[in-house]
Length: 135
Image 1 (spheres, rainbow, N blue to C red):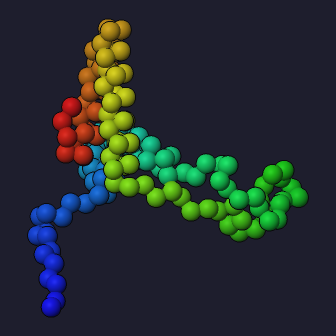
Image 2 (image 1 turned 90 degrees about the vertical axis):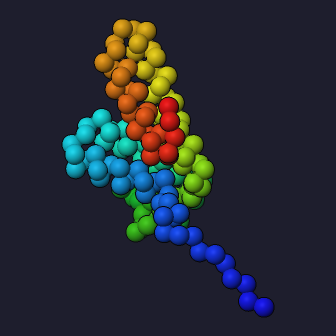
């Protein structure tokens, strides 16, 4: 007996968070929305930082450079694969970036900088919008 699996309709397939962030960044750059571009670049950078392998996990080079102390010699001598983050991990990073902005906005309001606070709240709304969430 053959098992038939249902394939989701095209409108049910949603791109991953990082793809949506990159698409939103392209749109922001196209429309010259500086605030949105800044927030989206920041979130993408935070994801990239989270994918980085801690220096303690990088294997010692088999050949060292005689010109630079502690440097590895040879093409790709110190290359290691980046960490793979789950969609949940990436979503949590974006939520954390938005939460930082909301917290900073409150501090700006308290310090009587309402324009800066509104910009931070807008950045948070943009990031949460990519996740399909509200502030």
